[in-house]
Length: 116
Length: 113
Image 1 (cartoon, chains in turn blue, orange):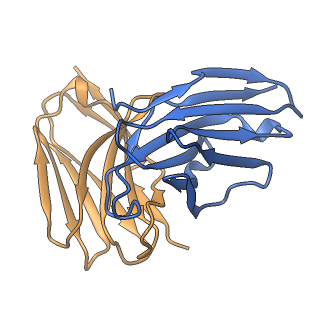
Image 2 (cartoon, rainbow over the protein chains, first blue to last red; image 1 turned 120 degrees about the vertical axis):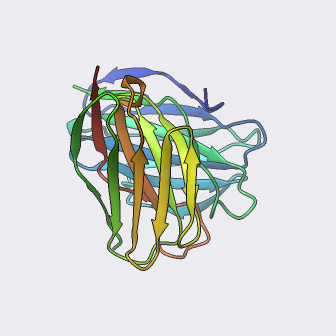
Image 3 (tube, rainbow over the protein chains, first blue to last red; image 1 turned 60 degrees about the vertical axis):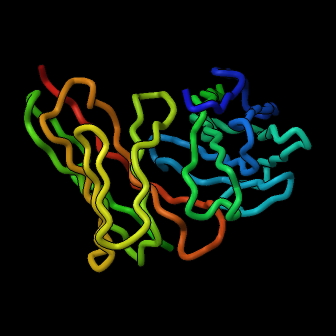
């Protein structure tokens, strides 16, 4: 158990819909990361938050957005869902003392999203 | 953009055999992480290598970082069924001071009892 929790574990929805994925980082960690894992693209970095502020951005679609709240939990919002958004979405966390650089990221169990 | 290539893509070994997985970067490595993943589950952190020539071991797994070759290797000695899974290497994206990581495509390991 990494100490990172994600809910829900599974999500089935229809195209065009909007969903919210939730992540609670390990106790004390200030940085939260979101990744998408799919068969064709592999594991891709989406976005990093540090203490409530956006720190780094990957190839995150405009239809996707994230935020980190004062209690440090984070949410990833996916809207206007398409079939191709079906994937495993992981959240990871790290202490964030160096902005996340050179830190171990601990991954949550993931949310499996299926868009029908 | 930087890419990580893992080889082999998949591996089937007999229990007790040794094996090596390689991870090669298209650009300079500023550190390297190894993770293990059971299919459809979260990633389990194995090791982080930060300096060229660094070598770390955990139980029967050893990882090395060769900065000159822009490569890392993961070696498992006397493999066991519990070693089966997908091994992923990850690296910091360039020299940025963020936690953005890029990952290889993974190496799937099966260990036959």
